[in-house]
Image (cartoon, rainbow, N blue to C red; front, top):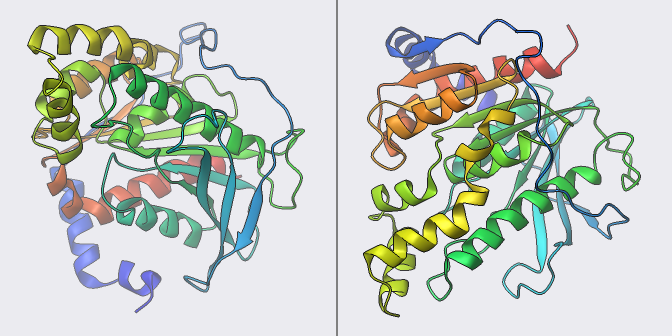
Length: 328
């Protein structure tokens, strides 16, 4: 069964209808002249030619073609992350709109691929990035984690250099003048940093998002990647005070909370789980407030149970990106 047929099945329609009634939705604020300004870009990087490989992949669905995009990372000295990779899904009818899709901290790419395929079905190209390997490296430290987060921001933006219409580095026929960004969980926290400063991002959706990395590391300690990272530090003599001190020192400069004020509230959508134990609701709420209270949808879910609302989230995302990226 194709995704298009599955998306129209009765259970999907019923679940979406139920979700519409139980989710709490807050509209975007009215624009205030001079009320939002993007601050100076702290993630600036040197522009220039970028060597890349764009290779056709096996067809996934009839509505779009799938391509593999690979190029050298800005920091080629990181042995685990010398290259950057993304999957481009391009509607066969063509598209001038592209949504960058950023994944969760660990596991496979099933959630982000679901959204990437769904948007491509609807006529919006998607570029689903692989995550950096071991952002939280059990053999590394907070300095390395902060560096890999910063490198993630820069390398996604360099990927846009290859695809954004008018970019000197864009040297292939698939180019886009309307660009959005979708991030989920850790991907939303990195996406926050990209959308806050890259003027090419015209619409942003941050799903299961928040800030305050030092806080989230404590609340998410049961997650495999977080647990292994913290236990690795503790095995090298880090006590609780040193963990918190260095988490703040190295991660606060790349903390979404510090940069959310540069997000455009008129084009940003935030989706939270009211009972999320991983990125607690109060943390996400503080981010929402720091971002000037953009449109927000609060689901009656936790972090992983939000998957039960997948069809509803997908409809929210399609409406959001269609509104801001596709000509009326």
